[in-house]
Image (cartoon, rainbow, N blue to C red; front, side, top):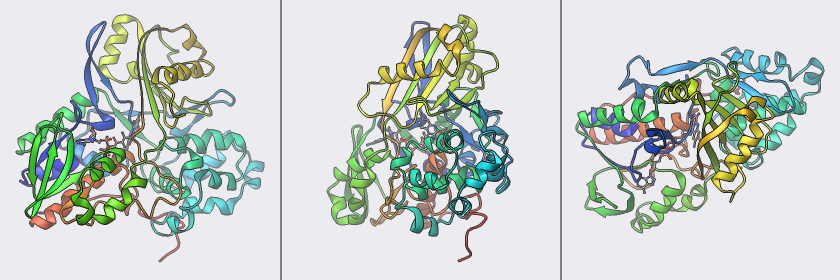
Length: 465
Ligand SMILES: Cc1cc2nc3c(=O)[nH]c(=O)nc-3n(C[C@H](O)[C@H](O)[C@H](O)COP(=O)(O)OP(=O)(O)OC[C@H]3O[C@@H](n4cnc5c(N)ncnc54)[C@H](O)[C@@H]3O)c2cc1C
């Protein structure tokens, strides 16, 4: 959608093919029938961080002041074993934020700092897009955290919660990727660990306005159109989909990793046209562990002092809790009418082959020791999902990670698993790679490109080249 926005604005005729009935992917929202009438459900709560410069610029197309986003002031981390920590109160810039994370945090005392391996902490402040991967991509995030010799409480409350948010287990995630994410979200990020959220559902606040914007500029969005294969068509491409075949001079494949691998495998022409892309797919197409989302509509409410969004440390399944009825309008209205609460629970990297309802049940049971009043809530309705579509970042994967350009002329990739040379992740990476793909097309067609923005590309202590 970001690529389509940029291309359509410059007069390029653009068609978006979306397999699902609604666009938005892992950020989508859709109407569904409930006992109380028609309502909107979503794929899950998302934090729109302040350093998502490229994604925010796309969103400014439909709301120039981003008034639809509301600042979420707190970011507590809950634990069954230790007192709550507040991520939201860190100073914005490095190294003050790392020092504050280490010093001010009740999880760490001076004697802990003396025991800590400070040399092992240096790579966190020395992120470099080449050097970091050369030195740390073969190590696991788990081994890096262990080498810091942090006390268990600090590791659990500060570092693990942070790394869990990337949909990968530390033991299966590259240490270089974790350093890159520490840089992007904390140490190289001048905005602080601050984020905003839409006050209306994602369809109303993002996808419907972006669709109208693209259509106003002559673009088309076709839903329930799953691309099933790519063919050569003269100098360009033919994309075959469940809604018909489309001719295109340029193609951007902006699908999740398993879908990309499947589409490439179903396109024999790519064996000759893009052998390098084909070779990268078997490893790239294996997603990270499953994630689970459970939204509960309840009778009764949790304590008024509970934060809108909380991270959770070291529960076997539960990773976060969001109070939708204190965040989003439709849920707020439902809760007011029914004297209830809309509570969403997430697990970012869970055990495979467990049904969604079972994961939802485990998450609810793990919430009650953290918020005892949750025991009193009566569940009126539950929507539970488990899926595995997030990119995996295993040790040693960086060299094989595909970038925006492929080895086939006029075929590009975008998405949160695609490599960028500047710091980015999750929604911001999807938007940034989409804009980069559009820029390649615009350069080829003689159009003006869209500026790309980044936080500082290297860490404070990165060695000069
Ligand atoms: C529970 C949860 C919470 C999250 N929280 C955050 C957060 O707080 N902050 C953050 O930045 N990110 C968060 N993320 C991650 C974020 O959702 C993703 O990084 C982002 O949405 C990825 O966008 P994408 O366009 O790369 O891929 P997707 O969103 O997966 O989109 C891919 C699209 O391709 C479509 N598709 C697949 N195959 C085909 C085909 N053959 N033909 C046509 N279309 C096809 C799919 O239907 C989908 O619409 C969260 C994700 C989840 C699941």
